[in-house]
Length: 78
Image (tube, rainbow, N blue to C red; front, side, top):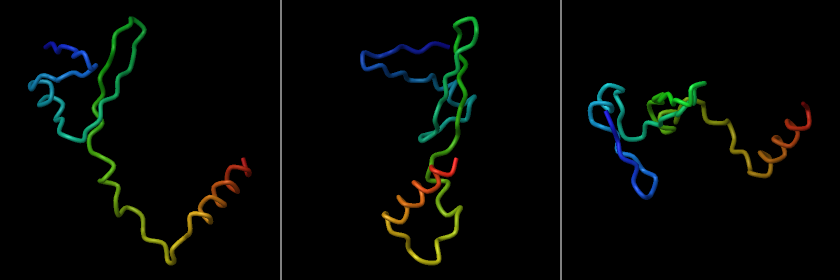
C-alpha cells in the first residue's frame, strides 16, 4: 500500500489499511522509529471524549485558584 504526502504535509491512509487497523474518525496514530530508520505505525483508538464520566463529580465545586494552589503544593512535594 502507498500514500502520497500533500503539500500541507497530510496523508490519506488507504482504505484497506484503515479497515485492517479498524481506524475511525477521532483515532490517533503514533509513529515510532526503529533502528533501521523505518517507522512503525501504532493505532490509538478512541478519543478523549470516552473518558468523560469516569471520575465522580466533586462534592463541592473547586475554584481555579484552589486548583492552582493544589498543583503548586503538589509540585513542591517532590
